[in-house]
Length: 227
Image 1: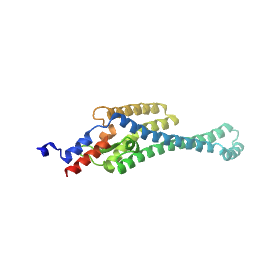
Image 2: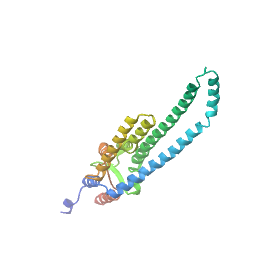
Image 3: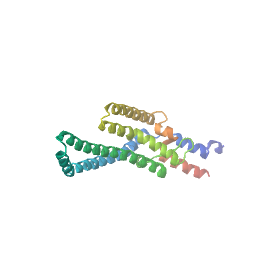
Image 4: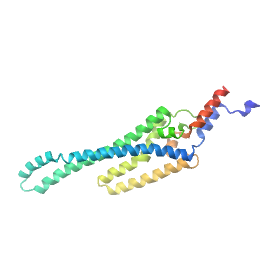
């Protein structure tokens, strides 16, 4: 009689994996992880500003070059100044684009390594959440971790980084389009994570779910007792 009422280990783990994570804790986990990306973005912005500022005093070398070009310009002084300005502008745009690329790479590595090693990000760990395989529980593995990290990176920072790069490059129309896509994809991903089964777009594409770490530990302890 008792044996019939007890769930098997497989069904117990499946129940733990399918249970939705609390909204408040999931929001806190996302906010903590996103705060890390924001902090890195601020650091990269400061380093990029310093890098560009360092190139402006370096105009002394450009000035020396442009002075010679002025002498040999046959009176086309405006063309010489334009060439020097364009050189500095291209260097500045390259620095900005490299900073956004570094932010995207950092965000992906941050999520991928955390999921592959700990099955949770630092923010999820602080909120007592973990990522498990959908349907069977267990660690997501490197493949699922990579997919989830990639989708999370694109939704959280990827589209915004691309929009900013296009904006500073003068592609205003494409930049606005990317901003619209960024806002829509972020809202869609967030909505899926907070309603229904509470599985975000990243969770669904990676075949994982976010659940309470307390619940997983309880299930594992119960399975151990049954054995």
